[in-house]
Length: 197
Image (tube, rainbow, N blue to C red):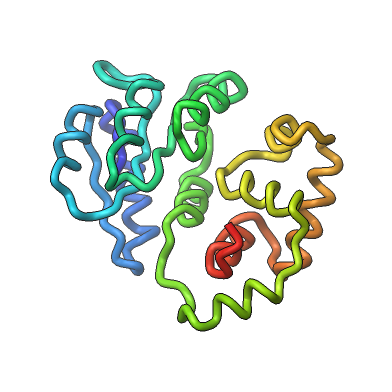
């Protein structure tokens, strides 16, 4: 569900995300405000990822994030905004958002971030135990991987774990090597399949 009061941006993003997930059969809904979104989700048996503009008339911001996060059918709330990312990412994550996306991001990047959150059909469950044993990650690497899954850049990860950014880069490189992947999205998807997160 996309919630944004700007009709041009909302329609364009809705169309792009719809194209991204059409082959997986993931429906996309777009509404102009948080109240409409809450009304639409009331009684819904489906699970939702909510992509919500931080600054809108009516219910929005941190209160809006908390309102959607409280709904049992909402798996993730993703905050999106043109506001200062360094200032607002920690605030929105603390309020319950899984990650913060800048409106300066490309639509492809937004789709990639959402794809990492949406758990599409994975390998048969019989393979997960074997996969879990195959990957040897340290406790610290699992912590880094968990923060990668939330969409945090290296600097935020370094701050949260109180380690240097260079150390984070080393951990990320080791995670990629161990999981045999080339980027963060692949790492998150593979870790989800292997139940490492």
